[in-house]
Image (cartoon, rainbow, N blue to C red; front, top):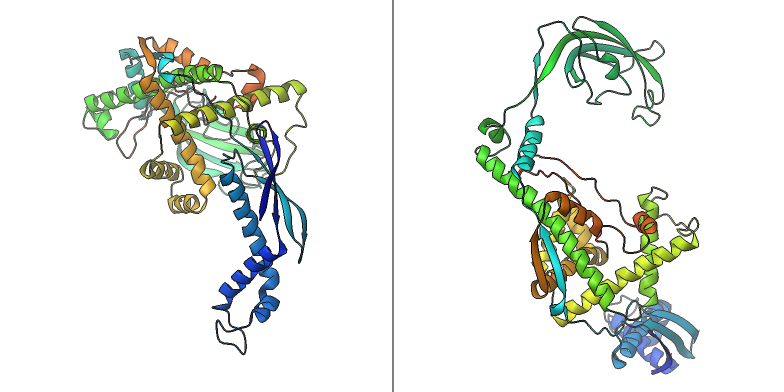
Length: 489
């Protein structure tokens, strides 16, 4: 086998690899002998069949296997002998191969750049944090209480308001024909809850107990029942009772309904959750500062293959995020982009790849690793997102190394960021929630063109104001919450 470097330009290396016919024949014969030890061939005991018989029966199949293994082994040898750190999988191109004349191919590989790290101990960052105030905690408790509301009958005969409830009988038809699911009795309908189709509830606002109403609605085109999809329906409604909301009291009884011992325990859980949300915002801001500094402090060539792959990933994500294509569907992601947008997306991709390489080098030099336990916990957390399908999720990650790596990568990044934050200079500052929220929102803004980055980044969840009981008896409540699927670099 002969390995010769034929090109060296920037981060690209190219090698010519030649294997003689004799070397290939030797590998083929060795593989045939392995097969012959167990092969069942008529007239011969296992291991006794002549090589010529084995070659005639298995030669073609073995040749393909041997060539694939030879290419892999020789490519790895070229990489190891030249002490190359590949950025991506090498590209192999067979230049000549004929039976009896040997094999010649070229291997093109991009190498990782040499990165001279800045002194991370000298990095200076500001960590802004906030504490939940009484008003925010009380508002969160109020939202929990609102989710536990009840209704009581209104004795006086007056008009129903939005937010109140009516007990009704209803009977619907389409073109005079009754259809299944369009009739009900003693149904409690909260006006404004959007439980019923179209403007059904709006047409009942102002009704009184004892009223009989005719309500006309149109079912949406994509309605689940094809018989009703896009069609107009008429409902005869008998209003039987008006009910008003009874505001629940925030006390120990409410806390026990939520699974807590008393109001104090519920309040502590809510406070802890809000503080956790604030801490996430604080980290988002300080991490963005760190990434910006690392971007500014480092300059090196980016492997073109890695840049192209990340660029395609951004465009692919954008297309599916906007619902333009089904997953797995081949599409031209660039066809509707202006040259300016393409440039902006390239800049985003370059920053991501650059920062990924810098953080990887920090991790390598400081022996940062993701433990098997941490990876298992990440798989378990992912499985919890699919109730009833946990077994399938576990099997998927067990059998799909690249998917497991996709879970490992963000864990590694966060551990590396934590390491840097521990040893660099961080100034702690207390701010109001409003200031912290603005800092967190600013941290999610693009580092290049705003319009392009906004389109390229995954959609982020809206600020949430929720509270609920979980099986682990944890209250989740926040005045604002900012999350993103993928960290902006």
